[in-house]
Image (cartoon, rainbow, N blue to C red; front, side):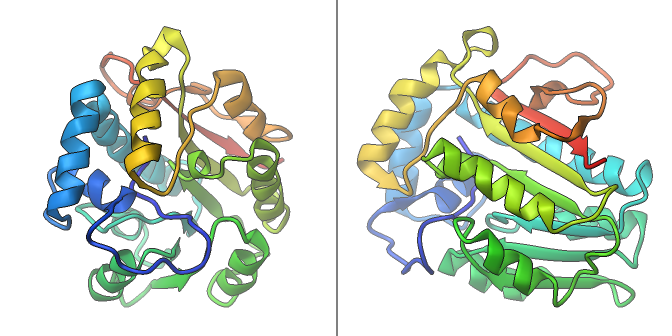
Length: 269
């Protein structure tokens, strides 16, 4: 349903009595940074839509492959990761700085539990920079302004939006967020994106009742979209091979089963 990100308006207050996406996502991928209520809702959603755990793992694996691809094959050394989620193994900065120790990474989230863990765990190489800003995906101008204190927007930037735009319920607003952020970065920059879909060809029909239950019992609210609507986020960009596919099948050496979460990497001309 997402990658554990938290885009709700303003800095959220920590509420352990209401299931929260970052913590439930952490539970689905086997983490320990969650509470009983998160586990209960997570189990209920997984009972309704068992593939959710596969989506969570596939999205995380996509992040690893995409960051390596961007760093190794495209030579990008700057990453703006919007909607960080709770730190786990092989976070964006660890993968990028393994390829190039001088890589600069800015993480963006506004969940208080993510903020605490990020400040403790998201430390990088001495040659590079790893920074964290507390900001809301609904305010792209603030993200760009604050990220510009760490990143050089005259050089290419990989903008990471994994499982985050599904929390922007207004489709036009979601597209505008992408446009505003991509307008701030130069030619050669990339958009790395995943998004859940209800498309039947990827088995996405089960997202609809599961997300309805989620929106009634947890926070923040979420939506899936059609492949056509998700593809429109890449308008004006050049999709790189293999294009927009199930994130489980993006640049994999084998042929894993698809999950109803699209993934793609595109370059700004």
